[in-house]
Length: 283
Image (cartoon, rainbow, N blue to C red; front, side):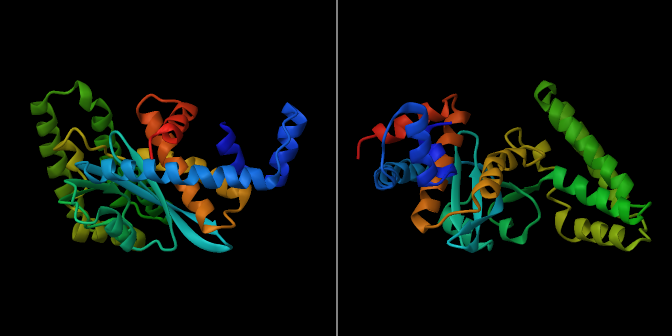
């Protein structure tokens, strides 16, 4: 953990005690606050560069989790591409956040769960199959024996093909796609008799028919949104440890720091190396 990470995780008072007790380094709480405030500007500049990289990417994955800012519920969003991950904290979970992030840009494919705010931002949409497997299991636990069990097996089969995709020829992937398409047609024609199974089947038929197998048409699209969930996991822990932020600028600096560290990891950089590069960048 870097010093800047530690400052975000514990109170200023505790940080002064830690630095004095472990290293004999005496810093006032005001000095720590000033250091973070000075770091905010280069962090923001680097985060803006990361945002533009993600914005111009053909495939973007997104997810969000709750955050606390000044005692109020906010949402930490992540937008992930192949070479960069951008974080932002906003007071809403609505579609205005991804719309504002994209501006005039429009990616080829968007990867996310079924939250309405994350839909209709790209030419095509890949639903996270891991989320759908959980939805199918919920319907199974609720008593559906017709659609949900067969649909779960279908999704697991699709994910297994996705995991082997790197070793498969294009012709083989197309053959799998045709087989899965036919199987999906058969599943959607079933007569589900249990409420949760019917609701899941109806939602697939109405809105998800073209959003399940996009990853079989493009090798740069994953069948699950694990990349976004991994990017947000440290922030979930952070929220539980700290109970959030006491200032808006602190939340912004933290999101920028998350962007820098996550993007650094994607490019083989340690958190410390990525942070140092951001701080050393010319104004």
